[in-house]
Amino acid sequence: MPYTQDIVEELNILVRYNLTTTQEGIKVHKTATPETINATRRLYDKGLISQKDGGYLTSLGREVTEQAQAILDILKPA
Image (tube, rainbow, N blue to C red; front, side, top):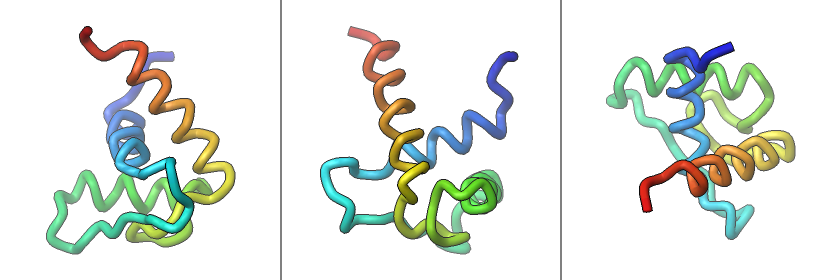
């Protein structure tokens, strides 16, 4: 199954999280693009983040984000 645009948008939100600390979250403001707002809400609905507008990663969200960032590290241009 190829990545859908929704999945790409969700991954783009997740990789914004700083994995070196659990004390730092993100906030998606109402002025963000509709795609970003919707992706953030989907992540909340899936139990990956703590708030509909960002917040902190859940334990599942942290696992997924670690994997997403690892994929980016492998695929990014040298």
